[in-house]
Length: 91
Image 1 (cartoon, rainbow, N blue to C red):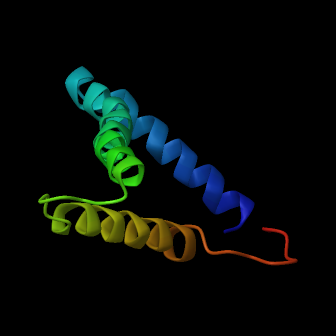
Image 2: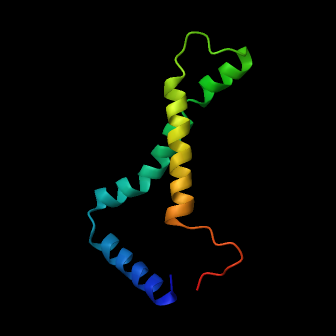
């Protein structure tokens, strides 16, 4: 991405935010926080699994699905949204 297109994108975002309703801006700002809380919610249960050394009778599918989903989003964000550029500077 060159400097001109980055500046144009920044200006477009500022215009969009200036014309957005307050509730939309609030929801856009609170969404990442809620997502982090949601992703970390099973941590206490997983720690119990580790302490006991067994999952007992609890189903593993929700935890496996959450882990897989998180890894896929991480890979998508890393390689498609912000591609890794090794040894190259962004121009």
